[in-house]
Length: 150
Image (cartoon, rainbow, N blue to C red; front, side):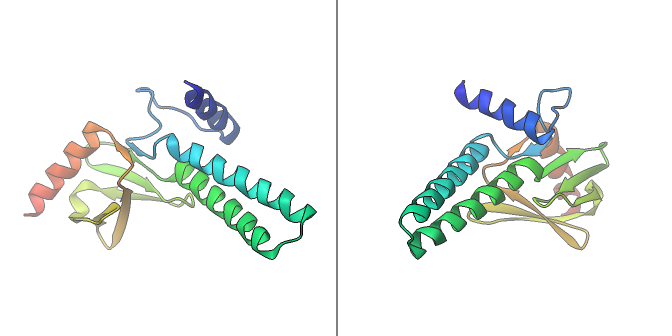
């Protein structure tokens, strides 16, 4: 419950909206990623405060590393998603907010990696983290497109 309140606050701060189903997208990253982001940012702040009082280069490096990891995790949670436009098209947004529109008929293959999946679409790749939450409709449309490529 506490995490849900934190997520709602972050969604308001970042200007995010849920769709009619109550989900942010047809593929999105789970709320634990924003919690991890905030932990990294808090550790970065704690290391920075410690580095001010006891100037230690190693602690300063950990501070910068905490900030960078926190911001990257927040960007992934905020931006990386897939929205289904219709049964023929979907949009993929990268972690940096760049949006691409693809057709399901352009799907050429799927490669499963240890920590993610790569969907080959036209001449590009769509990265899907293993922790990502996918809607049943998206999974069904991807599977249908993969069956047609065989």
